[in-house]
Image (cartoon, rainbow, N blue to C red; front, side, top):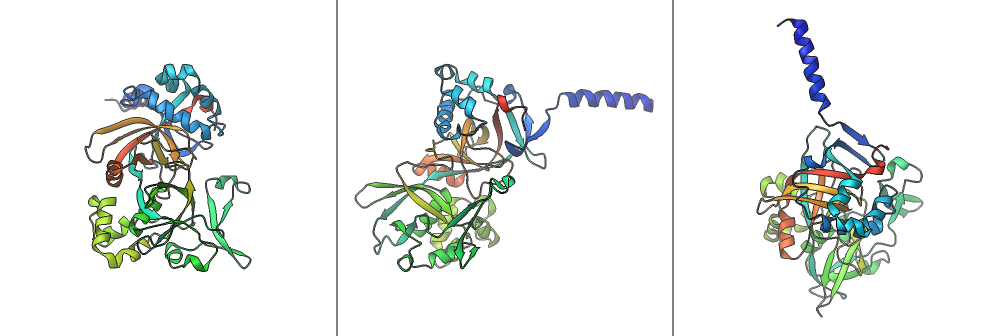
Length: 377
């Protein structure tokens, strides 16, 4: 073929194909992720979802998220009776869906899971109940830099005052070495009987403690010591103790129970430490609302704002059956970082624990952005 004709045909083909390709864009005021505009019909199984359940959770979370000006209008609309009469149309009429894309161009990321654990404990320290669940320390300083540096609004500086300087707060190992009776800074909410389960409670972020009389204490996230989160499963893989494909909450606990002399050393690899608050609510996310099993997600808030609906496409870690549903971003976590990253809240009980412990699936995420903000950055 004539070279000139070849070039013309190529140009025409390129124009045709690029004209049909959704544009990758960013919306700095909403998300730092790479966003690909999609049509509703392109989201597999969206129409098959229970939209009424999704809307009810969205409205529940709107009690906190409607303070966000991006959500104020759509939250007000969601609360109206007409929205509940046709919840699918509510989402379609009021949101534009965007598919999250990684910097490398991938459209799948890691989906893990979490749950609300139940521990056995007491208000008093005993021979059995000897591991303290600490409330937020009096000397923990949290600095919000957003008033000075708006670009750092997603970051918090945590430490303590020594002399006239703000220094890093104590690490996990340092906190565990302190006798709380010798300091006014550390106050136990209660004591539990299992330090491994206490460690997992900190990873989950909230849970329940059952007292000897059968009553329960709700324990909610209070603060973090400022040290980076480190996944101890990574250390076990490096040690060739557990194969990467077999890492789960269950396999990690099994190894810890089989190697009691190594427990403290391994747990201390994660210098991050979570402090709690006694709460009247069950499991509560960073948004401040009670979490709904199978409808709330923990996310990286730099990429997915709290309160926003997110359609998730992933699989059940045990049955391998597809999970396709609209969920609401209502929580965050130290390990939940990335352009396509989410933590699926499974609720409480043994089934939830089993699912959460094994959940490490690949998945796609679609962020629903209110249409009134669609053209604003």
